[in-house]
Length: 221
Image (cartoon, rainbow, N blue to C red; front, side):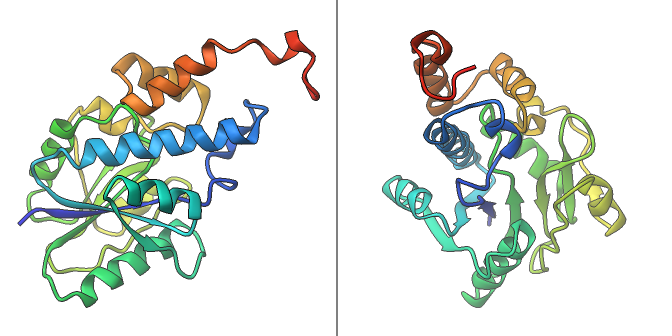
């Protein structure tokens, strides 16, 4: 049957703020967030146990980019954060009448391997389950039981929240599935694992550009 994975993405100007503070140009930040998400979605789609990957967002730029890739985009309504977006996506899929398993995958896993995602889904079996990030506090993957609501609890210390809600902790190593990117340190960790093509190409392009402070750009330190 396979899992239908929802990947929620905030509007680009709101996403990954801890990364944005370390990068001076808004357009560079937007491209980085987009690259992280594209590599995540494309890697997830290669997993044999994933039936379909759907993006949930209200950002027009992201909507256009993913639809160009042939990825279905669901509207983020009522634009009240990731959990509301996931509940809305879960509801829309439920209205289609197909009794499939729903999951939620974070959009910042640029080193993701489909084989490791398959391993996590296999370990979950039929139970509602979650995979914590490498720090053990956040959640990178949440799986509902077949035919049941997702009940997302993403946010601060979401691993504890999901465990308290009755979800089973997935214990496999799966380094690429646990390596979400919130900071430059996280990005370096993902780079060591092997980045997807979009993020890798973007970072290589940025490394080849002159330093802003050396060319007298406004706002350079």
